[in-house]
Length: 124
Image 1: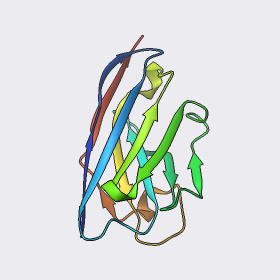
Image 2 (image 1 turned 180 degrees about the vertical axis):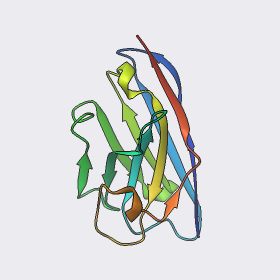
Image 3 (image 1 turned 120 degrees about the vertical axis):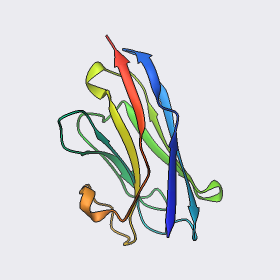
Image 4 (image 1 turned 30 degrees about the vertical axis):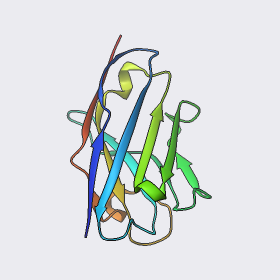
């Protein structure tokens, strides 16, 4: 079992930056991909970014490419999401997720463990 706890959300003005963190605990930090997803009110959960354990395989949603960066520190059992040039449409609850299998995917149902989410609000 893996427990994931996100932190770092908050209120920021458009154009600003935030860094989200997700610390894993429980059994050995997943050997599989870690991902970030987000969900705005009334909308489905959508993929943001994911990478493999080594970082050799990384995928970003088109909407965040060039603005967000996912990284992970396996020694600290932590994955990060650096968000720059934030826009009001980035406002959502952000969730980190871990997958047991090794392939990096963008589908929420492929991920086995989820954090509780952290709110990000970008004001215009």
